[in-house]
Length: 412
Image (cartoon, rainbow, N blue to C red; front, side, top):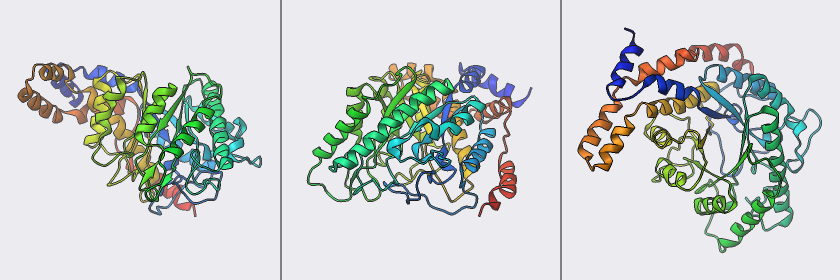
């Protein structure tokens, strides 16, 4: 008997079907963020990163062109099991001489990305880019008191809705379009309400744009603070959740966008009680919204457990969002995405039915014992079997090192 068969039998004693878990995981799509490959640089602006976003490190091999980024994404995807989508920011428009500002973006500026996705039979998710641009005035975009600035960014949002509709129709897969703005103030504001009312007005105007609501899912993401925006953010959690409910769009939670003592895993069930669908950006914050590579850590596992135990795999859009320039960027992609998938598989292999039964019976002693036992079941053997069935290498570091030596180090 091999290790997988032995592990499968052990899980069966707890009423867990390992084969079903493998099949379920194979059907889960994770949306992979393009911006890990070039440190959130994009192709439409030479401006430095702004809006509380920064990367640290100078590891060799950053993608400098669309072709380089696509090649790196391909290499990462070849080492990631299961289903994936490509998550793009608007700043990754490819112009080829037909340059346009963000308020005038058209499908032609993303035609190469659509060709890339269609050739690989994957979908595209999308994000308006409300940062790193000269029209970010005094740190404000959709909430700006300068009507010219506000209108510019409203037009950008409208173009992105149209582009999301285009992506969904061209690829045949639903497109999740996420709105996040960095707007806020470094010090205590004299007026907290007016910026939020302007943000609300801007969102209302963006959502006037027609789109196929069966194929495009618009989400709204909050943030508690950012660098240079420590005292106040316009798009707070309360604002974004309230607006999402009012407008009938999808709330998105990034687990780096809350106070360090808050846990997104605890919030998932609250949102599922009131929303047909929710969205997640899975990251790893270290002391703040630092967007470290996702690990197979406690919070990642708890997030996955909340999705799985509530039978919400079909209701939660899962995407990764981090950027580390201090290590090999492809390894960062592969490690982080695999850890999201690993956490989902771990969640699928929990004795949830029995644990719920024990909780409802107030048998908390046995519940604690069982939950601790489940932590040391032979999960690694099930994960290894999943990788084998998906035809990806368990030991991917040597493949990445070879790519680094042949490709990445030659980028100067």
